[in-house]
Every structure is written in C-alpha cells, then in structure tokens.
Image 1 (cartoon, helix red, strand yellow):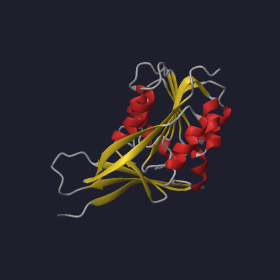
Image 2 (cartoon, helix red, strand yellow):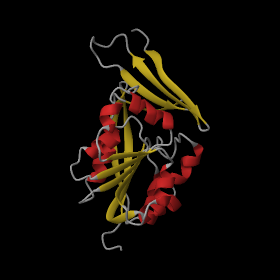
Image 3 (cartoon, rainbow, N blue to C red):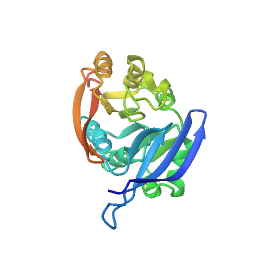
Amino acid sequence: MTAVEYVEVARATSERGEVVLRERRDPDAPEGSTTVLELRVNGVFVMDNCETSSEVALAEAALSVVDEPRSVLVGGLGLGFTAHEVLADHRVEHLVVAELEEALVGWFRDGTIPHGQAFLADDRLSIAVVDVRQVVAEAAEESFDLVLLDVDNGPDFLVHEGNAELYGPEFLAAVHRCLRPGGAVAVWSSTRAPGLERAMTEVYAGCATRECPVVLQGREDTYFLYTGQRRRDEG
C-alpha cells in the first residue's frame, strides 16, 4: 500500500493562528477518483469534502423541527456543506453564515475551493466575516427561525479556546433571545457532550440528541447533533 500524500493548496495566518487548505491524495485510489480537500485550523482537522454526512445531518435535523425556517443563521462556514443543505430547502428565504476567518471566505470567492463560487451564488446567502457571537449579540429579538453552530469539533475539541462559551448557558440563552417562538438551535459535536446537553436543557424546553454514524478514511465513528427548541407559546 502506497502512503497517502498531502499537498498544500493554501495557507493563511491571523491573530488566531493558522488556516490550511490541503489535498489528500491516495495513490491507490481508483483512477478518476475525486481528490479529497481538507480544512485544518491550527493543526486541527476540521472537515473534508469526502465525508459530509454529519454537516448535511446538522441542517436536516434543525430544518425538520421548524415549520417555517425562513431566516437561518449558521455559525461556521467550513467547506460550505451545512449552508448548502440549508439553501436546498425551498422554505429558506435568507441565510446568514458567520465565518471568523476572512481567508477562508476568500478561498470560496476566488475558486481556490473548487465548489466555492457555486455555493456562494445563491442570492439568499449573506456571509458575515465576524464571530457568530457578534451576529447573535447584534440581532434583533426573534429574528431567526434556526441557528446552527458548527464552529468547532464540539465542546471537547475546540478550534479556539475562546469558543468554549458557545456551548454554555449564557450564549445559548442569547441565541434563545434571537429565535422566534418555535425556532430551534442545533449544535454539532464529534463526541458525546453531556455538558452541552445539560446547558441546552437549562435554556430550552429539553434537548434532543441524534447520533450520526460516519466512516472516516475507513474507520467507523459516531458524531452527535444536539437540538433545542424555543416553545411556540413563548412571546
């Protein structure tokens, strides 16, 4: 078996550290196979374009519990698959994606990420190059029907240490404020996160946990989606 090769496509640095886009090339893969694109932040694997089922499931899980998801906020652009799935729902009228790394957004816009320009072409999509906390803090009350958080590998595997507060009751309460009655928040985690589940149960009317089996480079694993909903009788 020939070793997998990694070829750097793009690299950027900011005050938060380093963002790297690279190709993963398997010499033993069948001819014509799609080259795998990986996104890493500060050396931490964030995602690739090979196994995207959990990103799609995050969108599906949230969209399934809201009757009219007209206005949606996604925290974290990644490689765009969660946002792309949200926009596949004809009920969505406006999607805001908050992405902290300007370079990543630039790679979408200039074609460094091959599918980037196509993903950004939908006129319902707005990209905010800011922390998702700023978007939530500045949002008017009851302005979103859905908020999806996919900025880390979950509360136990943070891309940036400062993101820990995103999974606590204070920020989840801020999200609750900007949700319309019946709206929902969904959070992705690469591991089971009982602390997040407790925090969501504290703020919302319970917390639904959904397991998402995946296969990563031949290895079976399970990711988790946590969903909380604002009661419809809250005003």
